[in-house]
Image (cartoon, helix red, strand yellow):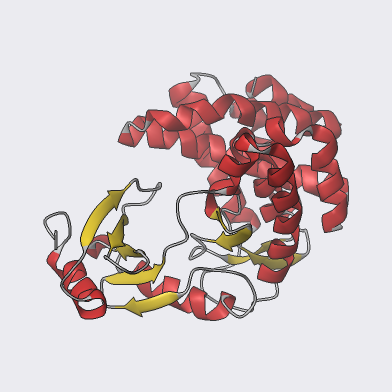
Length: 301
């Protein structure tokens, strides 16, 4: 047993469930401060451990409530056991939908088509886990982009387009509402034996029906691999008007620039900078489709 990398409270849960014979492999984290580990045991499948530090421990209860709501509808990793600080889940590996698409485009496209169905099933869940998206929430996200991307990273003046930022926030908030994952993209869809599993869904909330679709088809430059024609085919397969898709994509693309910039400026995470160029391209595409927001293209070049 190798426990040196684990907090004692997390190791206690592993001993309770797995026994004494296991090893631990720390895994790269996401944008949160949660810590992830793969627990390997001889003669049996590995399991995933997530540890919640004290400052974010309330997120664990939220995750467990989200799991109870979503698991009857969408494929999510099975929760094996939870404690006050940690949760053990089925290990769905490291192979995600982005990776599959890059390595085998035909298989990736098949799975992206499957992801549309997974998204629709996810939306069937009913849960009051987090506050719903609002126009003010969307606008505050864009204000973060104004601060961290436009002013601090790009060193530009965003004041002339602030009214347009508020307008896009209000317009997206007027879309029909469903349950949103909030980060429904290829890195959060893991592939096991040709089947998709949804992870990192604890921040789900009610929001625009176009929100997760925009994330799936455009986050982190994936459209460069899918192609614009397939993007629109999948939008049509999902069944929403294209203009609403582009409105949601515009808000989300501007918002996520702020996320990338903040991660770099406040936490030194340089890997997020590589996503900025394709996100700017998405904004330009949206302003072509939505000419009333064309002035945003001048700021987000």
